[in-house]
Amino acid sequence: MIPVQAAPLWAYGIGATFAVAAGRQLQWWERSVRGEGVRTRSRAAQPYLALTVLYAALLLAPSGAYLLWQDPAWATMQVARDHRGVWAGFALFQTGSMVVGALLGFLAARLFVLVGAGYWGYLQAVAGYFLTFFTLVHGWDGRGYRRLLSPDARSYAEWSAGGGGARAFANHCLHFVTSGTFLALLVLGAAVLGVMLLVEIGWLAEGWRLPGAAADLKVSRPLAVVIAGAGVYVLPLAGALGASVLVRLLGWILGAGLFAALAGAVLLPRWSPVRRLYDLVGVPHRHWRVEPDPEGEPGRGDAVRASRSG
Image 1: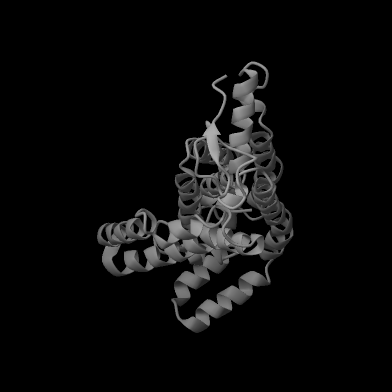
Image 2: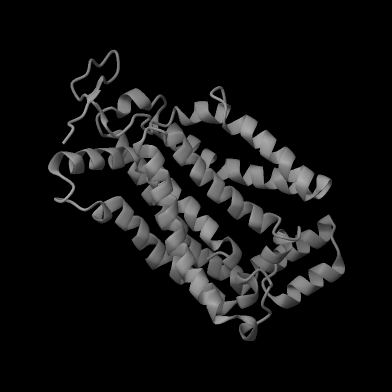
């Protein structure tokens, strides 16, 4: 349910978000596998990894393939005018990239979570969603939002011929939200996005019930969900809009360079406000070899101890 150009980026962000949401469970799984011996349970059979791949294969890929068939112009961001302009490789890329992207995003974020660098796993999700939103908002020629809000090639041509302006923008938005493409997005989005949010919130809540979560979760659970959602979705969207403005004003080289410097200052330092908000959500900060003690003193938080070496 997203254009071909942004499909793998979105899938990567989803996979990374799933891994961070299940970060505490992933660490407990790694300890149990290590304790029993790696031959007793395959890491490839890890339920969170398997469910991520199933989600991408059963929801993301089919919804994208459906929209590519129903409206090839919108699904290719107006690169193809109709079915005759859709190369067979587009369908293969659309479906395959969703599964591969989600898998790579999950594995990359999982790696950071297991070594105690969960914040960098979270940044994998931020990067995936930022690139997704930037592709949709700006695109490769500054007309990404026009391509996105045009349900067919004719609407896109009329928009390009008619120029900009607030009134023209409102008219095109109205035309898009009354189109069959938007109706299909609503129906598919209810399933795809609904399941996605249920999985992310459910895995976060599941992790908060494990030993050691009380020391990491520093706000109420509803507030933690709001902070997590803002950090994964709102922050990348705001960044994509800001990057688009800078690129329009300064050009690709200066605009992208300035945005990269600003993003680094906001995300990377230890005093970063984003890092401080991340620290409130309750995603583990420890290496998987360091295990919380369920019998730790409640007043001082959970103690940690070295896990079994095998």
